[in-house]
Image (cartoon, rainbow, N blue to C red; front, side, top):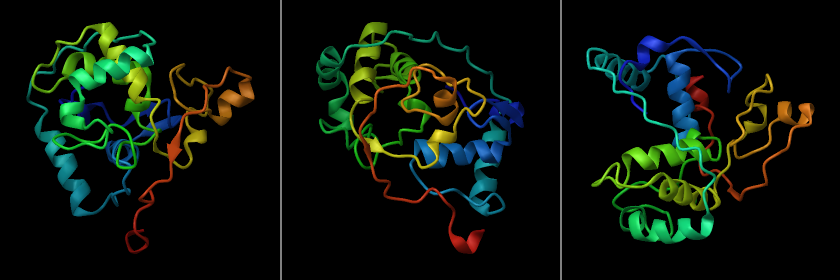
Length: 206
């Protein structure tokens, strides 16, 4: 969950890509998946500035890793818990307001890490609500995640190529080519929306 020390962990192998990834590639993964945005050219100022900022965090102590919430969650309870704990900042329709969108056209894509049940539930458990972090029980966090993740969100073109070595985590929200080839049980289809922004960088920057 923390960015502290992240630049010291790259380059590194990442299973979702199935190869070694640089810090610049990891940043672009966040941009195109978690922000449903457009890749940053690696040699341009914006990318260099982000890397420099992350590098400046190296001297800070790395916080302990939070316990993972591995519960499946219940959508019906999750809708009620979302209304009670999340809607005041993220909106009843998930479109955001005082805080970013969590579903809908301007939310993160289905290819984002937060589109996985365990990742979102763990994030909610230890970080939300923003003004009362850590107050949600594991069950509440899992229920909210289950409800949020079954709402429509932007698609991520090419997501079927993720985890090419067949080691797709069980809570990934979409089918991959490698999982199909293995004959694995595929996740139920989730509603996706057409992306508002192409993930590719501008032509002039290529």
